[in-house]
Length: 106
Image 1 (cartoon, rainbow, N blue to C red):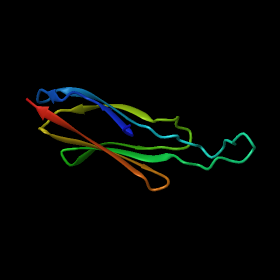
Image 2 (image 1 turned 90 degrees about the vertical axis):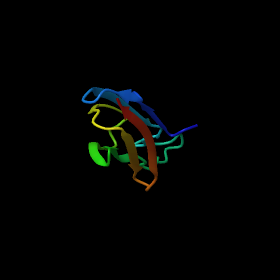
Image 3 (image 1 turned 120 degrees about the horizontal axis):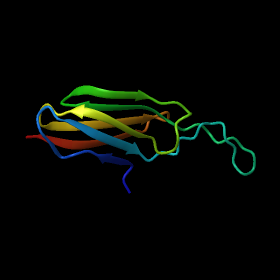
Protein backbone atom coordinates (compact mmCIF):
# COMPACT_ATOMS: atom_id res chain seq x y z
CA UNK A 1 0.00 0.00 0.00
CA UNK A 2 1.38 3.38 -0.95
CA UNK A 3 1.40 6.28 1.50
CA UNK A 4 0.54 8.95 -1.07
CA UNK A 5 -2.15 9.46 -3.70
CA UNK A 6 -1.67 12.00 -6.52
CA UNK A 7 -4.35 12.83 -9.07
CA UNK A 8 -3.47 15.14 -11.93
CA UNK A 9 -3.49 14.93 -15.71
CA UNK A 10 -0.44 13.40 -17.39
CA UNK A 11 -0.68 15.93 -20.25
CA UNK A 12 -1.77 19.53 -20.62
CA UNK A 13 -1.55 22.25 -23.24
CA UNK A 14 0.95 25.05 -22.67
CA UNK A 15 -0.67 27.69 -20.45
CA UNK A 16 -3.55 25.45 -19.40
CA UNK A 17 -4.51 25.48 -15.73
CA UNK A 18 -4.78 21.96 -14.28
CA UNK A 19 -6.21 20.64 -11.03
CA UNK A 20 -3.80 18.82 -8.73
CA UNK A 21 -5.03 16.62 -5.88
CA UNK A 22 -2.61 15.22 -3.32
CA UNK A 23 -3.20 13.09 -0.24
CA UNK A 24 -0.96 11.35 2.27
CA UNK A 25 -2.15 8.47 4.45
CA UNK A 26 -1.34 9.57 7.99
CA UNK A 27 -3.12 9.19 11.37
CA UNK A 28 -2.79 12.90 12.33
CA UNK A 29 -3.04 12.30 16.09
CA UNK A 30 -3.57 15.65 17.82
CA UNK A 31 -2.16 14.67 21.19
CA UNK A 32 -5.46 15.58 22.86
CA UNK A 33 -7.12 12.16 22.66
CA UNK A 34 -6.84 9.27 25.13
CA UNK A 35 -6.86 5.54 24.52
CA UNK A 36 -9.39 3.11 26.01
CA UNK A 37 -7.56 3.03 29.40
CA UNK A 38 -7.20 6.80 29.69
CA UNK A 39 -3.58 7.10 28.58
CA UNK A 40 -2.89 10.10 26.31
CA UNK A 41 -2.17 9.25 22.66
CA UNK A 42 1.06 10.95 21.60
CA UNK A 43 0.87 13.77 19.06
CA UNK A 44 1.81 12.64 15.55
CA UNK A 45 0.98 15.04 12.72
CA UNK A 46 2.17 16.05 9.28
CA UNK A 47 3.68 19.49 9.78
CA UNK A 48 4.36 20.59 6.22
CA UNK A 49 3.47 19.91 2.61
CA UNK A 50 5.37 21.34 -0.36
CA UNK A 51 4.81 20.94 -4.11
CA UNK A 52 7.50 21.85 -6.64
CA UNK A 53 7.14 22.01 -10.41
CA UNK A 54 10.16 22.44 -12.63
CA UNK A 55 12.28 22.97 -9.50
CA UNK A 56 10.14 25.93 -8.28
CA UNK A 57 7.90 25.84 -5.26
CA UNK A 58 4.28 26.25 -6.40
CA UNK A 59 2.35 25.32 -3.25
CA UNK A 60 3.13 25.13 0.48
CA UNK A 61 1.03 24.37 3.54
CA UNK A 62 1.89 24.36 7.25
CA UNK A 63 -0.41 21.98 9.12
CA UNK A 64 -1.49 21.81 12.75
CA UNK A 65 -3.19 19.34 15.04
CA UNK A 66 -6.60 20.52 13.81
CA UNK A 67 -6.19 18.76 10.44
CA UNK A 68 -8.01 15.48 9.91
CA UNK A 69 -6.59 12.04 9.20
CA UNK A 70 -5.12 11.59 5.70
CA UNK A 71 -4.65 15.28 4.80
CA UNK A 72 -5.87 16.10 1.29
CA UNK A 73 -5.04 19.15 -0.81
CA UNK A 74 -6.48 20.43 -4.06
CA UNK A 75 -4.83 23.29 -5.90
CA UNK A 76 -4.26 24.58 -9.41
CA UNK A 77 -1.13 24.70 -11.53
CA UNK A 78 -0.43 26.38 -14.86
CA UNK A 79 1.30 24.02 -17.31
CA UNK A 80 4.46 25.76 -18.48
CA UNK A 81 6.92 23.06 -19.49
CA UNK A 82 7.30 19.31 -19.45
CA UNK A 83 8.72 18.20 -16.14
CA UNK A 84 8.30 16.52 -12.81
CA UNK A 85 5.88 17.70 -10.14
CA UNK A 86 7.40 16.77 -6.77
CA UNK A 87 5.34 16.40 -3.58
CA UNK A 88 6.85 16.28 -0.08
CA UNK A 89 5.15 15.85 3.30
CA UNK A 90 7.12 15.93 6.58
CA UNK A 91 5.70 14.80 9.91
CA UNK A 92 6.71 15.83 13.42
CA UNK A 93 8.73 12.64 13.90
CA UNK A 94 10.94 13.40 10.92
CA UNK A 95 9.34 10.96 8.49
CA UNK A 96 9.31 12.23 4.92
CA UNK A 97 6.71 11.12 2.39
CA UNK A 98 7.51 11.85 -1.26
CA UNK A 99 5.79 11.39 -4.59
CA UNK A 100 6.58 12.46 -8.15
CA UNK A 101 4.21 12.86 -11.07
CA UNK A 102 5.29 13.73 -14.61
CA UNK A 103 3.48 16.48 -16.53
CA UNK A 104 3.93 16.53 -20.28
CA UNK A 105 3.15 19.88 -21.88
CA UNK A 106 1.99 19.59 -25.48
